[in-house]
Amino acid sequence: MKTHIKVISKEEILNIIPLLQKLNSKTPINLLKERVKEMSEFSNYECVGLYIEEKLVGISGLWYSTRHYIGKTVEPDHVILDESLRGQGIGKQFFKWIDNHVQNKGCEAIELNAYVNNPKSHKFYYNEGYNIYGFHFLKVLRKDKKFY
Image (cartoon, rainbow, N blue to C red; front, side, top):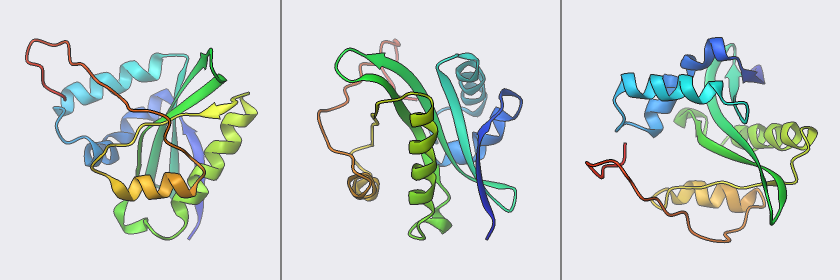
């Protein structure tokens, strides 16, 4: 099984949509595409892809910022690995690549959010050296108050 990991170009960014929809089934497809295109235009965002035999099987967005309490940091976002590949060490390989990639960009820490209803991801992140330091709160400002 030949794997490789790379930063996904802006021109190829919509290739993440099928995997992203597995994680985010609530957002209408046109809105999802619009948001992903807009995200790819930000200078503090990039998306990395994990490929097996040229097929995109894993993604993670990376949001870069500087925080007063830890310095330059990155937040992996919308992390997903094809279900058929889980438990084979591929996620560990993916995060090792991300660790090296962001350290080479000067990052001093990685922060991430994981949905409370995804305990398998919690176990994975614990095993990768992550600790829980707080809660992620969200307030929807749209009139419909819905999360999508």
